[in-house]
Image (cartoon, rainbow, N blue to C red; front, side):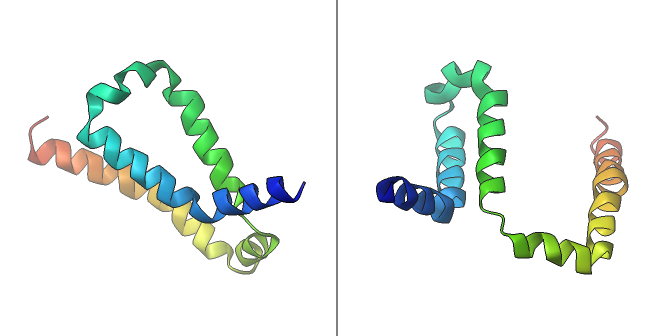
Length: 94
């Protein structure tokens, strides 16, 4: 059980580094990863699950104390990002 806890702690502490490493490798050597094309959605779910495992109770209490940050994130996600995408399409005539 201690080994599993140690592995979980290691993965939780280094998860972002693993994601970044494999993103860089996939960018540099796409032919190696082309066979994983059908696994993109399940692997993305695994990444999101792993990131969720790193959350602590304090993270949720921080959201409760500062809900304006969540509101800003929602506005950025649904207004600013599509607006920037539209602007880039106009600039590059896409």
